[in-house]
Length: 246
Figure 1 (cartoon, one colour):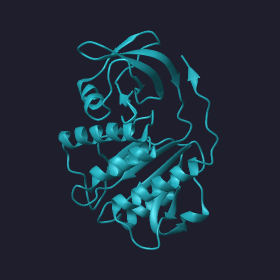
Figure 2 (figure 1 turned 45 degrees about the horizontal axis):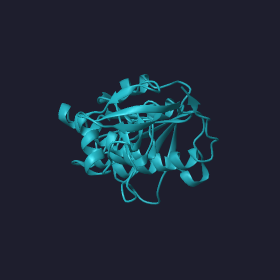
Figure 3 (figure 1 turned 180 degrees about the horizontal axis):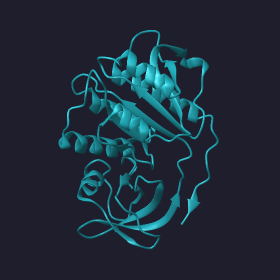
């Protein structure tokens, strides 16, 4: 690859075994040509967003293909799920992008008593594109899963029973004195208009621990990102799993 080229890290829906030829999506071909300035013969790193990571060499021809040379799997040892009420305006686009960069596993929009998410297939598709772009930028191999909005009670009923649960709350215990524990952590942030007293009481009954993320009141998207940053920092202290080759 040319010395001044950007690192080539691409996403594909499916990977094949070493020795196989991989046809790249048109969007990734444009990315390689325009952003990375990659050419036939260059090596690229490819992920399917499900933990598989491959080293491949670009082969000549149209459409551009890649020959898989090595393949390894990196398990997702620690998972974070963010449940988030609707923020103001279009701020969720920025939130999705940053959650993906920080390595959050799932983003679950939640409808609360005071505010519900606007239903839009176009918005979900845009978020998925942003998540893929953030995956490549951060060079991760686990893609942020974006779920359709659900009522708060239904979303909680689907959560893992063994996951630790946290509620972003200005009146909670200061985050600086705590660390995320357990293999899976759930962070819940209310909508821009806030949670009702009944919703807060229900969350307390469901063992959501209140956590204070700042010395001031945060916007919904800022609180969700602050929680994800706190979780991501805590993950750095956990031992990394060894990758497995295929």
